[in-house]
Length: 507
Image 1 (tube, helix red, strand yellow):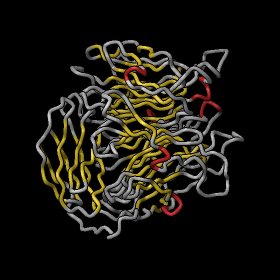
Image 2 (cartoon, helix red, strand yellow):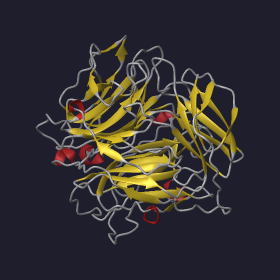
Image 3 (cartoon, helix red, strand yellow):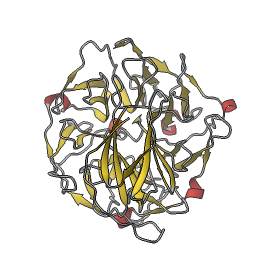
């Protein structure tokens, strides 16, 4: 393993008590951009955060719905400087009908490409290194006229291209819809250096989020799908597809527990230190936290929502007591105390009378006992706009997670973290061609408090994907150990590293 130090050390101290400290975010200006449109854009509204010009700072590509999508170039001056963005959208990205986007490295040239989700044909665009994009030539990818709201990608053994999954929502061509007219998930498995026609994973239950994850640490990622019961109405459920030669749904006999919810977004992260990922699922009403149980040996997650205090089922401020509507979800250590927290973008679908209209975004900060407390208002991010997608990512490489929030019929918002208290580590993980992003790798960080694990994935959230350094909060730890378990299941040796720096790790 090659390990390169890229940033100087900076000294930070963690407060002596164990109670979580409220992080602080400050709003920053960003070019005007609004996600808007009719009922086909009630859902979606995502943002992709990734470096498209090679300056090492994440840029932003924001879906617009019926408005043109826009690219925001990150012009922040130095690490830790105040965030600064400028709109600079090439013609190839100024598209209408965009619901979301995910950065993914497709062709192994070490330049990030884009999977663009649309009401209409989905697109794969090749990154050219200067924030310009062009259609792939000879890739064979074709898309029909879909309503796409979910995406994920993985690398299967021996392939030269990633496997892609597009989650379609309601079948726009079904004259008897929209209710009970859910479309299928479309799976693109490579055939050599091309894609053939997609395989339809059926039944489809109106997917709004999906994620390939090696949940069992077996070396194979399976596809988890979160579905919206509003349109499948009855007979549907959440799904997990076993990615065998012929994909199949896991069964109750294997430990999969059927349940239904208004599934909007998925987030996945190991919060217990056992190396296996927990999941957070957004919905209308209760948001679901599920803890993985490795003992049965199957895909078993047990509901721990109330035990952890993560229901986030009603607005925490604003005076509206009706149920909340959750969309994008993301894990991240927002105060760098060594414990992951949860951000949830919230907002009414449009004018649903049984759901809150004043529905501020949620920030659940984890306490020392593993329970979570709401701190969005104290942190300064309790927006009342109809939020949808988001990106929780370090935008200026100061070790603290910043926040971008997409809103429906209201301007997108940018928040800079100014109040993280603990030490940190940023980790860039690069793989070998063709899997340059090292999708499927696990980065493990070991300290006196235990092991933190990050799985390198593409997908999840709500129509929003990020690519960039993995952020670890370290609390008061000044030295930790780190290793990588690579996608081929080989692992590096544990190496000791100092806090408050950015590392680049290669095989």
